[in-house]
Length: 247
Image: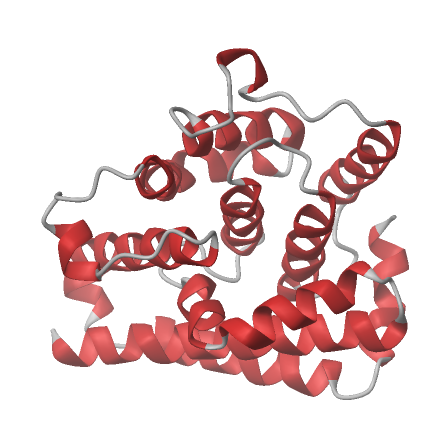
């Protein structure tokens, strides 16, 4: 898997228009005048919503206000919160040392989770197929994008990690964080204000179905996933605008 190999994915029907629409929505949201004075608090709110949605997609759903109040001790939720808080610091390392960052994400996400022992934290499962595809994914990330849209690369990173489930426990939390890191590190969302997880959870059946379709490797399956990721990102941009409008 290389960046140049991703280029043909842009020729799949409806993919490029979907990515373009999502990019326009993100750019418009990030130019909202309220972000000039309240970007910090909004980033915190986006991070909270991102974590709550990611945990729910992992089967651990709780009310946003309950999580905000600190009454939820579920290890998956707590792990998702730790992951979300760490993204800004990890983004500067993501495209240079993705394997180490993935290990750190897993440590943050899976500590204390059922079925994950200390020795498993940060270590991919022992499988030659997983090792080979993880190597290819990391090679993709360290290779310059070559003009491929950041959202396309993020969607492929996300889809690959969901298909592989290379880590024990809440591997999906790691996959969604890796996708968000790609958007941050590649400059589409440099301040980390877009949370595609809120779009994924709003379209959860589509998220699950298109992720499964992606894992088949067929053109239609990949196309379905890329279109979903674009729609989820567009929804996340709309959420940011709504939060900014609300002050």
